[in-house]
Amino acid sequence: MSCSDDDGLDQRLNWERLEELGGAFDRVRDPRDWQAPIHAVIPAADRPLVERALLLFTDTQPRFEPSPESADRLVVRSPGYRLGAERRAARRGPDPHTTTDRSAR
Image 1 (cartoon, helix red, strand yellow):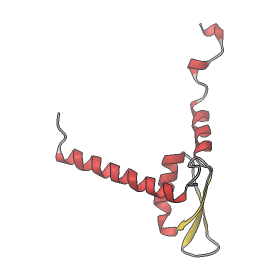
Image 2: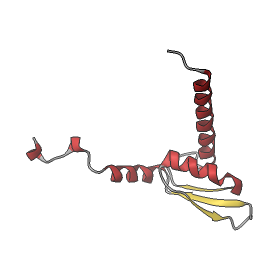
Image 3: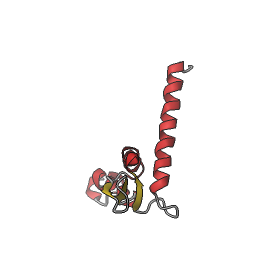
């Protein structure tokens, strides 16, 4: 089965969007530890892109504050990927495959 031209365009746009979000994440993450908490200063115009990138790559909600050094920049903070992983696990609840309740057998 072949993809239509529209499907190919959609796939290209999705990959380009993912690359754009990845680039935004790379600009704010700790270069030595991508899972670490985020603390960076960004241009205010980048807020929507950085917010979507952090939601995607860390599963945490970033906070934005005005930068004390410049009116057109924002300080962004996020708990980072590690805390996002803890939040994901808490939402899922206990893994039924690793339960220690033997009465279920």
